[in-house]
Image (tube, rainbow, N blue to C red; front, side, top):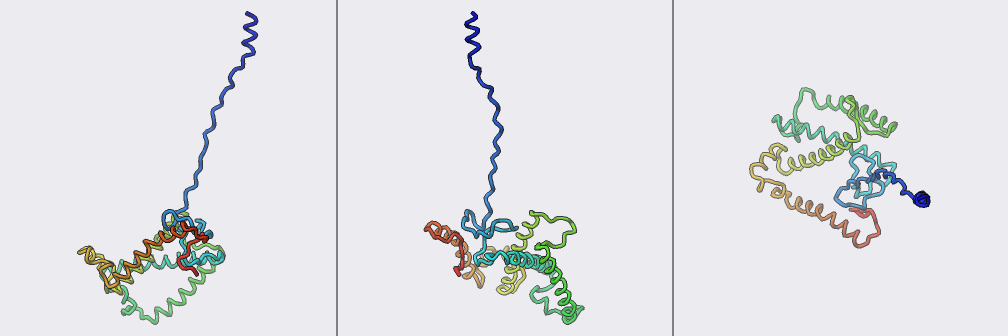
Length: 238
């Protein structure tokens, strides 16, 4: 019996198994691009700027010292476009006349006085804005409500780009149809199949443009599949 007790004493006991710590798997979200699956976006567009989707066919941002100025110019023009689009829609809804002839109308303050006051004021304000941008490198506007955040900056860029496209559309409607955006919308809703951009005087041009934009991603992917050494797409090669 003593021998059995000694034998049991030398039997190895299984080691206690410590529970494994939960493994954290961190996956980096894929960068949003201007068309799904784009992988050959310019290296200098690294996603750090609001609204960066890797689209720069002209290579304007290749010089890093100029990139911030292009970014600033885009957001300033976008803000002007948002104000213009809101004003055009308001004038059209109120029935105040054609927005593209507003500058030729007579007002309580004549055009000379407006220019004498407006131009110096614009120069001073634009100079102050440019000086502030040079000092801080930032393009944010006055923010009394404290709403500035990465999310709101992205929303601003998206709405600014949409407004610039909308203003181009308003201008095209005025030139081709001689009507404002609300009137054009009403006409389209009356008969969508017959009153649209493809049945207008620029229908052929619009069709070609849409087709070109539709096949552009196919061309890009074809170049990659054929082993093009250039890893950055350039719509215009020079």
